[in-house]
Image: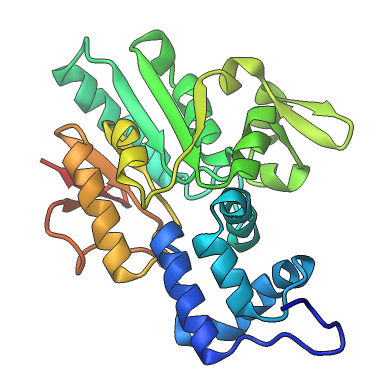
Length: 281
């Protein structure tokens, strides 16, 4: 059926259930029953743009139209993405890596190349913060460190590759760090090439084992402020994949408002200088 603009498109309980389940299956994002209106608000423009008269039509496009589904899932993911991020966010977990964990790790493994994976990097502020902090401490001159940053959103990764940021993303940076690592460019700030090239950018869906496997072979994983949008089952699945591929010892950092204590026994929770990290032994 084609869209009739005189008839409002509403998300029925049945449509909500099948769309919610499909989105969770493909992206990990969880929409509880109390978020039905939110999902309707997010998806309504996409339904109308396609000329559909119901959310069922959009569901069938996503699930069964092999030709259109790839592009549509990319657009849908971008629509559902929560873009809030900025430099030096929850910096205590990066500080303990640079000042405490790395010195201990390198003392035991002085020749070992290290990998840090920013698993949900959005537009790149987190991995670039890690790179700046490592650079400030002189770690790049001392050991071989690889930083990989990924996100499910193609648009977010493209922005990260550009290395251009609005002033609001720099709000937690000191003026000294801003002057050292950024140059003004019209209405944006550009990260210095020396730091930007330290990060390798790619797309990855945390639900996909084939996409996670080559990235999760890391010593340190930052997967922060994403599990709050996942169901408990999806968090368990994701963390189990991390554990299976990570080096030993391995360090997993999650957001300050996130906890894995009731979801996994694979990792030991440690507090280091007031910051928390899950450790694989």
